[in-house]
Image (tube, rainbow, N blue to C red):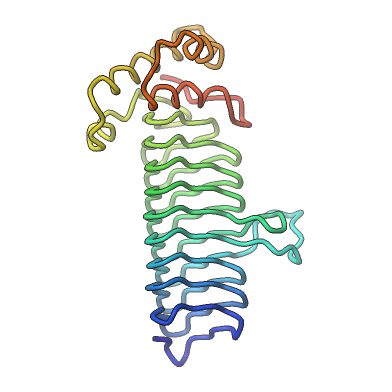
Length: 259
């Protein structure tokens, strides 16, 4: 159902059961999958692609131009939102800076009121951004990461899957998978509550703890220690191996540290 006051461009592609509320705007080339709901006054910009059952709440803007002074507005880029993701009031998601590239948000995510996802970010599945959290450009967020309210993440940072970043934190360095981040680039250990809720076996959690203590040995080099751990063959669970591999990648070259 499309409200009579909504503006839907003739080239937009909407599934038959999409709902568009009063004064909402769907721009040229946008694609909305089955069961999508766009609330009153929300805007879905040109070339944005929404999967099935995505909800865009009041005054959210999906696919706006990057806040990049060098950006050429004629570039054809977009935003891609996975199935069943919810974008609450005043959420903003900006399109990518390069032609043919999308800013990506995975499936089953929740972006709470006022959250911002900048250009070229890639978010995995089941990611939660709480109220007022802000991701700079090119940030990558792994599956099931939880970023609490008011958190600011610097461009090009990686937020590992399963991690929890506490409210109002300032993150300018990479957050490893399943870590607990707080303050300014501080690490309080592993997100043990999250691991338990996911039902991981005790031996997996134990191996993750072992990997954590290896990498964060006092005075050590995180990347070198992670490489040593991987080469030893002592770590067999997928979670521990992923944790160690995380320290071998990234563009920032720095990782949050225990306080």
